[in-house]
Image (cartoon, rainbow, N blue to C red; front, top):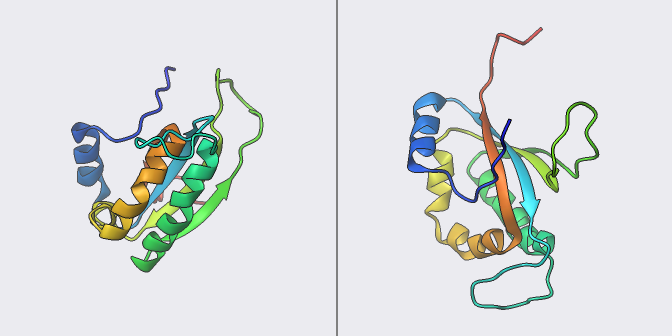
Length: 140
């Protein structure tokens, strides 16, 4: 299995996400990989860690999602693998629930998001963002 962290979805990925999501809630599993040092486009704060730059985005983004009816379900620093192997692990994981798939692009268009997005880009080396939809198949 090849894994490739990225910063943004491709148009095809985002279109498939919207087509699959329907009208109900969507849970997004975030697997985050931070830069060692923040990389702001304007060169500010060269000694700030990528994790600290991202935290300037993470808290305000959580509040934006909550104000839109969503919720941070879980976040943690992952440990070593219990099963399986990867050459490099992620630095943080989080599960964020959005009321609908359309909430994500709606938030991304707000001035508040555009103001904090710079910290996300400065802090992240890349991520995997995996949409998860409620399934009755595996519910006991």
